[in-house]
Image 1 (cartoon, rainbow, N blue to C red):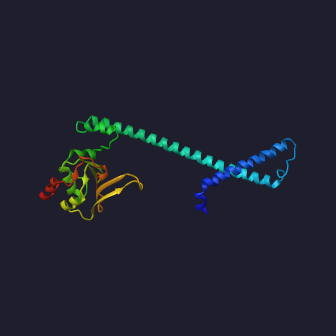
Image 2 (cartoon, rainbow, N blue to C red; image 1 turned 90 degrees about the vertical axis):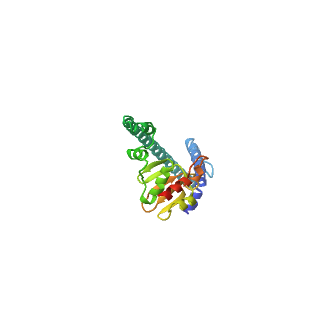
Image 3 (cartoon, rainbow, N blue to C red; image 1 turned 135 degrees about the vertical axis):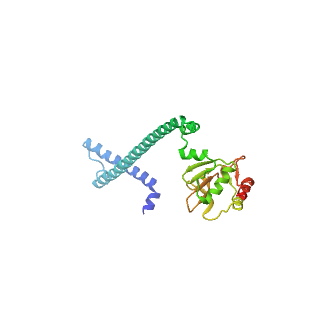
Length: 240
């Protein structure tokens, strides 16, 4: 029954409005006759239709009030959410500007000040990773691949603890030939959004430690996009 009502809710609302309108017109006619001290002609003079019309109008009025209250609550909730988002954005901008001012006064971090000011995430840990080519962020299972990417000239950025992003595509077959890719390491391409969305991602993940190397999805490839592993990175691994 509930499923039937949900499926036919627009039709039910329309019928309710039509019934309430007709009932309202009937009541208005009775009021007009009563105001002129004129008895209404049959069948307008019957009591049962009047009672039914009053009930229908009451139901229609109740539905209308409930719909209006729901609309008001929704608008109020939307406005409150928009206000919270504006406050959070203003706080974020202020925080970025304060951090950018600190970086601007530091010769080592000064070049990151404009990036921070426009909202990019450049924490001390992220800067240390960027400025120190030999360090790694991932777990021991992924460190060899991470180092090979860095030494192969692929741009990597620290994403958060244990996670980095690499500006390259992965050749899965070449990867398995060049590196010991086996559980707990896996390469995957997934949709991080809702079904049908284009929010596609590709990554190397260690399921034991949760470390991740995010890479470009094939749908994001450009003519000059680097592919990992290349022959150079394969030679790098053989020398280790």
